[in-house]
Length: 317
Image 1 (cartoon, one colour):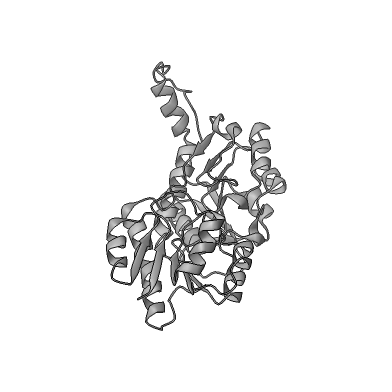
Image 2 (cartoon, one colour):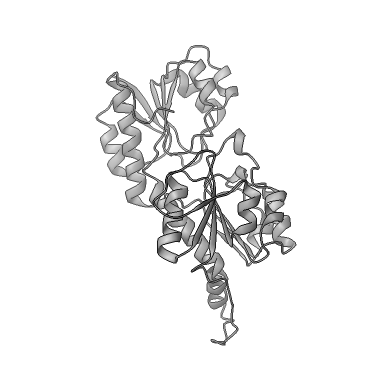
């Protein structure tokens, strides 16, 4: 019987199903694994179901000579916390859970767009403070999204889901940047560069994968290309954005505001961002619904079940 480690608590239905796949060990802590835990797990378990923050880096794999573990079945679409090349060199396969997260993440992107554009967080704080003096014609004027231009950086599953919501739901013009040509079910303009998209859009949304290739992809140059009334939204990975550059940009009034669900040094969020009224901050809520997290868990278990049965997992990376 395979020994399987689940590194953080998952929805009850997922844990019940996991019991049928082998001898399950549950790590009850909600914080990521430390280095010693990861090294020990690679030696002690046949399969590990890790999550965001469990940093299986090259350094971790160099500390394991002949790991017992043969599969890292990641819970999540993003796997930049796993050095896939180093894992393969040690004989491990890696899977992820694409598709299950698409609509939920796109919904969060729209929530951040709307809250930032219409100053909803600022308005709620004003009301709760007891300082609201009532409606007047120039109260908290924000950006009207209908008919505006959205720039999608990364037109994969999630980028397309965001673009569809913007196009069909709000009549927005869509411009985008993508490494490869896309056949889309809606009208959209492919831009030459990120700077080109930034200069045309009223809202920029980042939806590219994390990793070394995209670290600080969004930087001073991108923010400088944006229009002064534009807002910036990130639902991808925190280190895609040069957070210091974003803070400088907001402080200098180069753009109107930002909506963030992820952070460069998560879970640390700079105080300078917390104190800005024109910034909407979420605690990484992208996939935070019971249905979606259960779906993610079941997809991870599908990958594990296929692996145990000698089949190629559907979501091998």
